[in-house]
Amino acid sequence: MNYTEFKHCGLNVALEVLSGKWKPIILFHLFHQEEIRFTDLWRNIPRVAKKVLLDHLKQLEADGLIVREERQVFPPEVYYRISEKGKALGPALAALENWANVHAAAQVQDLKDKKKVANGQR
Image (cartoon, rainbow, N blue to C red; front, side, top):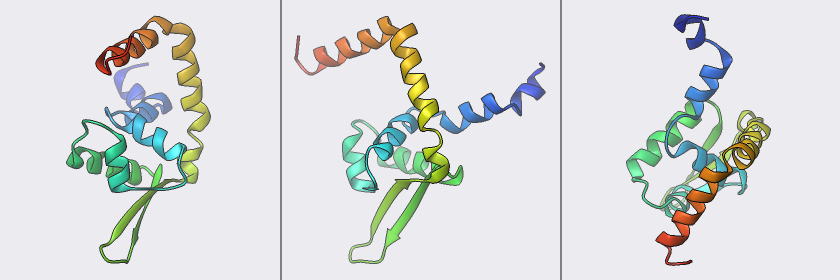
């Protein structure tokens, strides 16, 4: 397979749709909540800039993985939820997590340990 063929293969397209530092965690939150307001999502993801979060949400919406709903109240409220197309990713993402827990267990544990140290736990 040459680069042109790979560029248009399903695996590359899927990885491109999911690529981005914050997209997996955005999807994680949307899988675990029926809907979430933008501000709550932003508060749940430490260290993400609002502009970057908005950009990732727009990309996920453009790819059909999430649905954006603006409610006409004062002040306006914007909610996000996972779309049917996005829900179909659930088994694939669960399989990736299971793969990491089995085949990259040391890296997963290292990340957990770093988080504990950063939070002052031991």
